[in-house]
Amino acid sequence: MRFVELASRFDASVSVEKDGQTVDGREPMELMLLEGVCGSALNITTRGPEAAAALEALAELVARGFDEA
Image (cartoon, rainbow, N blue to C red; front, side):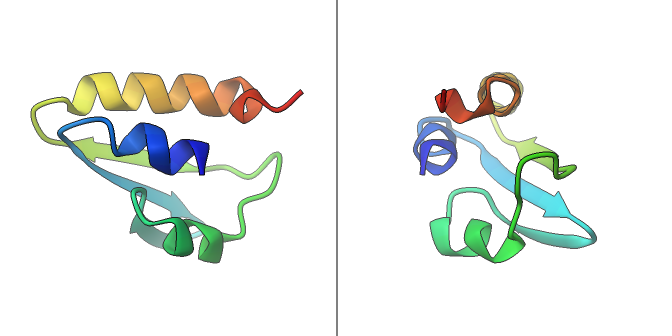
């Protein structure tokens, strides 16, 4: 949910790809279908006026392990 909440803050579309399957990064159910677990390789693509900021923020969130300690 943290990913979806953060993605929704930006004026940008967000796509997440894992193993050839691409989903809308703003849709929690679609993200759950990717079954991404710790260590999964994800490709995040953003488009729109705030695409660069969205990509940076989302990449940081993933790098921090979604702030789960």
